[in-house]
Image (cartoon, rainbow over all chains, first blue to last red; front, top):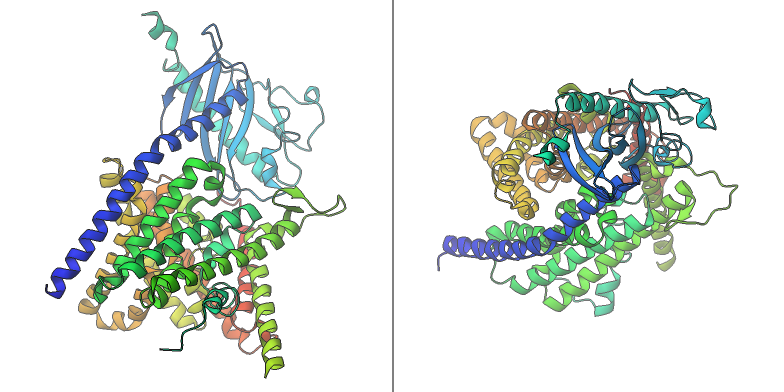
Length: 201
Length: 205
Length: 191
């Protein structure tokens, strides 16, 4: 066999073997990876809207994904919003829940962040930053309370605590939430969040 | 060709004399990037070892069939296949680790250690010897990651593998888990490695 | 996130070398002289821009539509390898002076993790076409900035009294650490 023929044969054979091997591996792991992803979302929805029994995706665009959450009697108990934006260092991905009328926040959870450890990374801390989000009024944009206070009564209805020493990270989270809230209200006004009518027909 | 080493020496050279990180300065990107926590360092070390050992096995088995002109391309395809397998496996069975390591798992494909060993060793040596070499280099790499990540996690978070090891008096040195800490720690470790090397040399001569 | 954000972030905030630790080998290897560091930076920027375009097309026109995402790593690395080869041949034919300046750096680029990192990160961040290209150019310029600054410091370091065991890579890494610290001052500046 001439050299160039051998080169082509070897490369083709190696390519075919590796291609088919990867196809098998891809097939075998695909389901499981997809399942992991869904499970992550599911856990997050249950975290931000604890009364959730079942949930389904109701709206999706470039900036956010909205899940409708239902309790055991199939009543809408709120919407879970999955969104992301730029933080202090890199992208922050988070999810929060709101009540069906989009007037009160239920809970917030940070899914992915690369903020400064020990400072900005406290946005994931249940005991400080995430503590008093429940029940915040979100009819108007949320604002930041600095310095942080130790009980929800001391906050204005639409205020949340800032992290001491990491104001920018706190601001960034708030920005991401406010921006998506604004978008959510538009979507709601456009009638795209009402599955009731669909169910009725 | 230099005289053949004993099997033991072939393995041990990867630990110190030819340690990929401290002596050859190879694979620096993952070494710096994933060593902010010991668990990430170990996962990265094992994933790299998996790819290196299997690539060495395949390359040394088929080395006679590969024409010289396309050897690099062939090596790359083989390495990339094993990297994909490692990446998928982590994503399927260890999602938190896969998430923490992010793009650095796929980046094993451009880790110079792996291509370097195929080019310098596996394509010229028997299957057995290549495997021993790959095991040695992997051990050396894991060792380096372990040292670096232990220092960074203990000083930077006060924990080891997630368990608190420093007393409550200890204020974590945040800089150690930041990129700057990675560079500085590795720089100092390289200096220490050279210092030890020069000390042992002067003693033996 | 608009295009300017992506660009500035790629150069300063999430600098490829100092934040993502990509391209450390050339960063340590080719940073002894400012001239050669600049040429290397330009070569990397050039290849990065092309890689951004090519990897986006492969990802969005072939891999995603046909559900072949498990071939991503293999196809990206092959694209980069052939791209570098093509660029080398093209430059040699079209512009011998440019080839003289960049030629020796091109083969080194294939195994430069910064290029592969760019393709993977752009796919991971789900950028659209324009953002991917901007990300490519910005990342290349960020790499150039880091390596040229490094070369400037190392030219001075040659004259300094560095402890013997730290000479070379050791002190270079420590300097890189201090640079990373300085660059972290850019964090949070982007809106």
